[in-house]
Length: 502
Image (cartoon, rainbow, N blue to C red; front, side, top):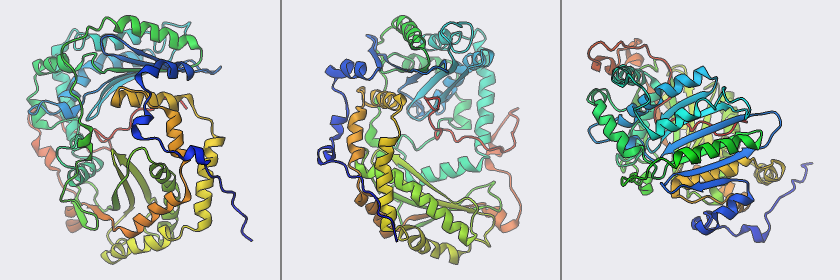
């Protein structure tokens, strides 16, 4: 006898889904909202936004401070791709060395639309010579006086240029980078800010001068829409000390006439008009050797602030379990995966598996596998599983306390995107409206729409059994030492460093 599954249904009152504009706190109520939820929020006169929060615990004393400039590789000068990334290297050089000296993590990252510097580590309020404290002044000065922290800037420029050229060569010998590049060029329109990669090319980086970087720094390292976020754990004094220091020092960051380029977010939904679901695409990826990766990709409309999107996030977990179980039972792959990614108004669902050789994944198996996935993965979800999925989704909201960092992250994201704080409580209204029908709708879509099949393989190795020299090695001129292919993070695809210490 099958046990009855308790259904948890939102009340009628909480099923009223707010419109996207209602998800933001009105400017007139920002401070009221911030005070109610122990968020510290300041708008400095020079354009800087400062957000801070403390998680009060007895056994920690840590801090994370992020400086996020709303500019990135997408805004590189047209003939100087990689300039933002190059500038980041120079600005972060001494910062990284200080982190190692004081046992804190310091670094910087260049994304297509953001340039970020950070420090995180120990921050005991009574031990000012250790951890974050000795580094914080340098982090502030890096923003206030870019390219002025290192006395040997000319020598540093030359050494970092060589390092970046080696870095680009490594990436172009890395199959993960090449696969990501191939998919971006297939799926995205060239006008999409996420089409490119932050590092630039060998040719463009060689042509960048120190004068170019000084000019770029004067345009982008400005207070306009700079977001400084502070997350501390432990004594409230940690946050207070950092916030007071930041306000005192950053208020001296003079407002300038130059404003940051505003990102047209509609461009994030520009896709390659020639890409289509239902087609098969093959990519020649040097370095995969005997491996063959088969990915089934759905790219489906999905707005940002709707219950369906929340439901898909939880559904992914069930699909992963069923896909893994089925593929393993067939003996086709050891670690098949299901991944989910979102852009502004699109959901990207990928079912992928890697096999050791083409014998395991013949054309016949590959062509029938999608039908098998419909039968053994999508259509195999029972009514009881749907009800249990919905039940656990809502019970989790009751059973798992909201971390203070969730509301903090919502605030930072809202201010970064629209210069307005996201209202986490309004997000809850969207999540509370999730029903069984939302899970079923996605399964119906995935079953009815044929995905694109992306095949990644090393054509030369498959035909000859031998590896080859990648063209990137032939492009490097001069005394740049080539580096053997090693797995590296794909530039531009790096996940944001976690703001919270779990």
